[in-house]
Amino acid sequence: MHISDGILNAPVLIGGFAGAGVLAVATMRNMDMEEIPKISVITAVFFVASSIKIPLGPTSVHLILNGLAAVVLGWRAFPAITLGLVLQAIILGHGGVTVIGVNALMMGGGGLIAYLVWQQRHRFHFKKKLFVFGALTGAVGVASSGIILALALATAGEAFHAVAEMVLLAHIPIILIEAGVVGACAEFLQKVKPELLAGQQAPRLQTSTDAG
Amino acid sequence: MAFDIDRYDHVASPLQSWDPRVKVASLGLLILVIALLKTIPMAVVAIAIAIGIMALSALPLHFVSHGLSFVLMFLIPFFFIMPFTYPGEGAFEILGVSFAWQGLRIATLIFIKALSIVMLSFVIFGSSRFDISMLALQRLKFPSIVVQMLLFAYRYTFVFLDEMKRMHISMRARGFIARSDRKTLKIYGHFIGTLLVRSFERTERVYKAMLSKGYQGKLHSMVQFHSVPLDYAKAAVILLITIGLLIGEFGGTLNTAVQAWY
Image (cartoon, rainbow over all chains, first blue to last red; front, side, top):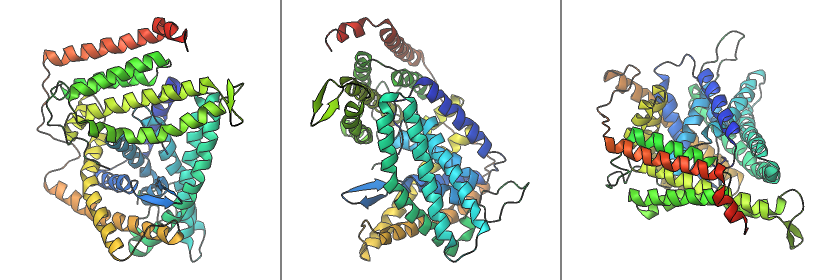
């Protein structure tokens, strides 16, 4: 879920762009030419995949997939997710243009937190490891972005506290659905094309984590 | 959902003939000011201006209304939640829950502002070809890497939309019906995984094709921007309107007149 224009104050908007800018620069460091088409193409896949509707009882939900972006792109998930947000705002009118910074912190930041979870899989060895860690990553991605969204809404004033709570509750079904989808996807990728998964080597101390 | 935002870029209008760089900068500033308005009278003025600019752009009504659908869906719940959860004493009660006018005011304010901004955003990007809009952003000092990636991503969006449609048809031909159950989630997980695998193979081919055409990390384009005095005249009009909104917001004459009755 994104936040729309017109809700947040100027300091929050500016803080959003500043924070997103810092994270974007940090996660795009040492990016070489070959990664440009790769990240762009995967951004397109996520943009398109976010239009899939999954039925939930009487209604349907769209997936956020920031956890899956982390599974496939590692740290580079942040620029990919941010670009996806820009495209959604411009092309579909989803989210808003003034809040791209805040939305990037929300979804992209959630994706980075999810990546930290994803990398923990190297410590374990059991049969359904990929599914479980994929599911956890997907869930943490959605949960983190939900929490940051609620915090952003809370800065808009007391009037928004109840909305923030409802937003958090509304994320719960999405967390469960995305856990299932991302878990299945991670397992599938491990079987079909493991090179697609990010951070396949267990990270050592000084090495910069490869982006897949 | 229609993804080709620039499908009406051939429609002639003062917006379409406006130098895209000046257009993006001027209307972008207007959008920013509208986002920060805090009074309903000024927000109403803002949406009137947005509607006026939309009318000038000659873009078909269904084009913009389609784009507004998300904002509407996202904000309608606010109207139901905010008046009933506003902290403090409400004005009266409906079905045992206290109703506060201030909550309704805030929801209305956000609604009007968000609608205006989406309208303007669609006017900006609907009145020029997408790659031209992106190059305009680059001339306005957006990082070249970001612009390149946006352009590639836009282009491949349509490729993957097609693939997604075909895969969906073949899934349904095999009897798949989307339901709220674990099997559906697993199938969609594999579906997205397949898209990713195909995209991976594609990026390798794309990169090699680009290299063979001389790609060195920079975007070269034959698009040339020329600005004429009329472009700056339009920018001046928008700037005056923006300043007018700010004065109205902080000056408050319109606000006090309206507040007298609501």
